[in-house]
Amino acid sequence: MIEEPATVISVDDGYAVVETQQRAACGACASASSCSTSVLSGLFKRRHNRLRVSNPIHAKPGARVIIGVEENVFLKISFLVYLLPLVCMIVMAILMQAVATHFMWLTGELPQVVGGLLGLISGFFLLRLFAGQNQDQPGYQAVILRSADTASVDFSREYVG
Image (cartoon, rainbow, N blue to C red; front, side, top):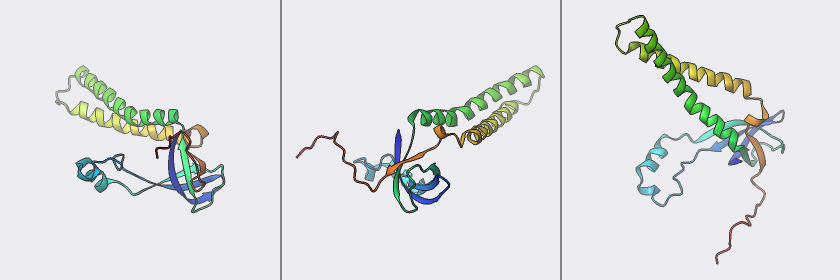
């Protein structure tokens, strides 16, 4: 389970709108103050993300909670988001090249560029359809796991005194 702290903004009908704060992955690095990657991530990051999540613990607005999503679902969605538009773009560019060669169009690389753009757009359209069909399925939704305000003790760490 991939977990993230969030703040509940509003609740309605078993769901909650939560706000997470986007953090740079290199924020805890010892070299963050002198690293150009850290500086760039500070310039271009959004401050907050809002999500609609399932609310099985009936959290109230203003509550600090931990939200989570299953790792296998996260990997599947990441795979689709990154690769589906790219694969569609490459396939359409190759198809347009084959069509241009078959009809002996002598327009240079224009058919491949147009095919690539059409493939990219169709890949994003397919993602939109997939998201619309699966948005209410429990396996594809983030869920509020627990309250972040409750004290949790991690017994897996050794005490070094």
